[in-house]
Image (cartoon, rainbow, N blue to C red; front, top):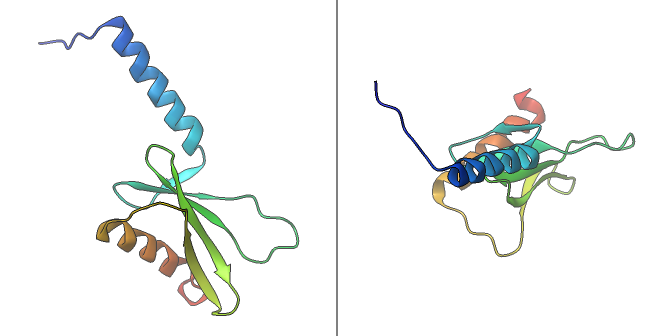
Length: 103
């Protein structure tokens, strides 16, 4: 049996990165290969939910919120963010699942 050996510094760096990721993404669910979603706390007077869309590294990409004018959830991207077709598809599928008629 072969064992992988890494330096103590590399192991500490890897552990720190894992801990940072878990702190940033606590309470998240995966919606694709690269994205997580986190439901935000809901004030008592709010009827609809609000979610953060995050990268697997914990970077905030935007919000999914209810847009009453269109009577549906929408994605509000954060400034200076770029999206691949696959990521947009994952976000669209998540929004589709939140529609009242989908539940």
